[in-house]
Image 1: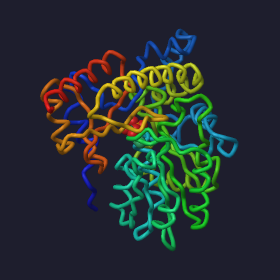
Image 2: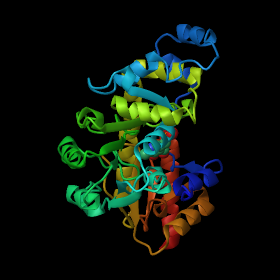
Image 3: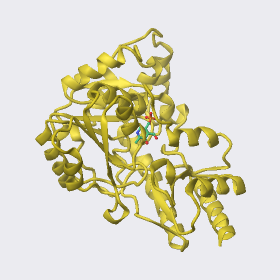
Image 4: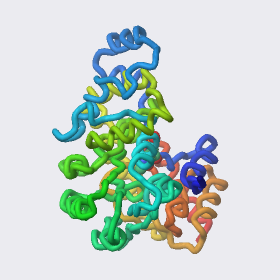
Length: 374
Ligand SMILES: Cc1ncc(COP(=O)(O)O)c(C=O)c1O
């Protein structure tokens, strides 16, 4: 089996520990353990419970407590038994992609998105067809393009809502159109929903695909919206058949998640309103800073993100995006991801959910770099 190099992860690995201004990161500025305990409102009881935790494998599929808390993020179709924990959303995606792809199946995936979502099915021998999200469509998928790519028979359609890198958000009516296409093919519809809950506008949250379609499968994690990437806890949520197939794969990769990670993820989701209030304040406040900055940089433009933590920013100068980003890094240590990692030349991905001073320092560093290119 051959798999394409994972460009965004390779770029992150190469630069993130030495960057002065890391504005490539996609997580909401992570919490410390201390902050999470404070957020729980009962730090003493939570730390005592952690001390008493039995350090065996724990519940193989994830604790009932955590799976119940995850299920509560969805509508009534999803109960604790429809949830399987995984090693982050990257682990969850891998399980779902492996479980739902057969060699020769047609798989339709939006692009740009997280490369794993289309590289894994391709490596498994699927016929992967890209549906490009275009700037002129505000990076929203065109249902007719999905229908055309699906051809006569498609086994799996892949979405990422809200989208990384563009921050685009597919609202319910468009989601329902895509569900209809999946239904026509009796296909699985996998949606990477790792940025769900980070819709910037109040009331703008579309349903999960699992709430719209009986073959809808959602992947999510504690990393981005809940600012707890270090717990390495994600999940697949979906109908019983999908969860069973994912568990068949997971038996070969995971055994169980970490019991301390599981317990802390449960604490966070049991206080989900407080966690999200913090996360939304960070993304909304920081996006206003980005907006103001872009309006003062004539060489740059973007489609303002509606959700998530990232924006795809296009620049005017004629420099390949890897050179652009490396030049920036070398000049003043500001770290963004080249659009080439997403098949989007002439652009870079900004992650704006970091600490405010890092964002401001990083944007000023990009401005200084742009002056050197004029
Ligand atoms: C769309 C998307 N899916 C999955 C992941 C993996 O996240 P996790 O840390 O939960 O494994 C990322 C990380 O950047 C992502 O952007």
